[in-house]
Image 1 (cartoon, rainbow, N blue to C red):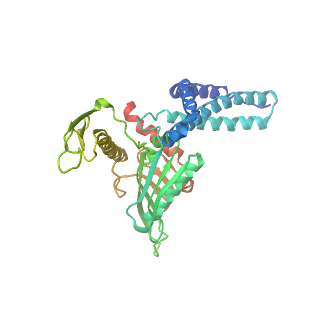
Image 2: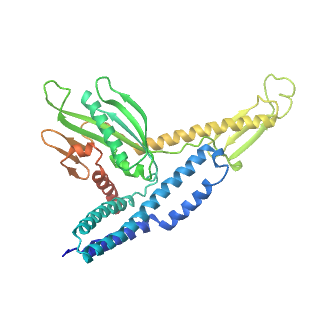
Image 3: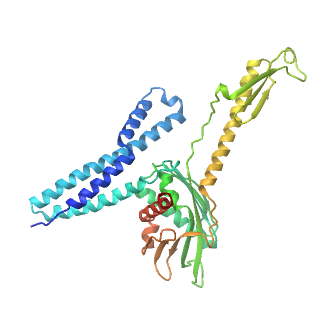
Length: 369
């Protein structure tokens, strides 16, 4: 007779799942999906391509998140039925299937529980990851390419859409740098713990003497910050002055108050225009210039934010966050969390879930202490 009692483990999973549902806010998620669906159904949505892409992307992300929650709910119900069938029918095959499903759900809920810790300002955003070869010559360039493949494999295994934006190849082997975008919910919050200096120790394939070589690569992770192509300026944020144009001019250019000066009060930016013949034309021209300057200022501020979030990574001795050791023994160890595995080949093939989960929990410790 099949001896299978998983009631305690299933009850524990249901408690964890209830906590996750509460943090995620399923009712709020469903309301957001309904609102975004209504926006996506507007006939003239694609008249504004940028807004349409934003709406459809956000809708897709939220639908994926809700589908995952609903799927777990169904799987927990199915697991209880499977256990009952295995016991009542004395079916060892069903019992084995139930145990395997329990392990799968335990792992999945563990990943979702970690995601509930991602509540930073940018954690829900897509991520832009840049890998740069550091100290170590050809080995470092080769190591950088190994890391690129590792992250692309990780994204592939999780079905995260990836777009490689730029790759700079080294002369002999490997890459000098590469940048790619991961467009998935919580991609930045998840991958941000990978930022830092990575260290590889191995018997160098590029060294004729076969000596052990240490090389470094830097990983930078920043959130994908949306850039608006036009700037709306509230009337209350502007002071508009008119004055008589100066300098040479024909007809009425310098005989009426047609010149316009716009001062943007929040930033102090001042733009003047007097080259057009009418005040209306000068105002429109000055407003376009002001919008361009504000857009440039906005992008500079976004770049400064990205730089601050990315931090300074030197890719050399003394500041490494993870070591990949291939010789004289096999090990990958995160020096911040002490999480380690003894199978580097699996890690380089994209098996990063353990490291990322440990990193997220480690990062939240100071705030929870």
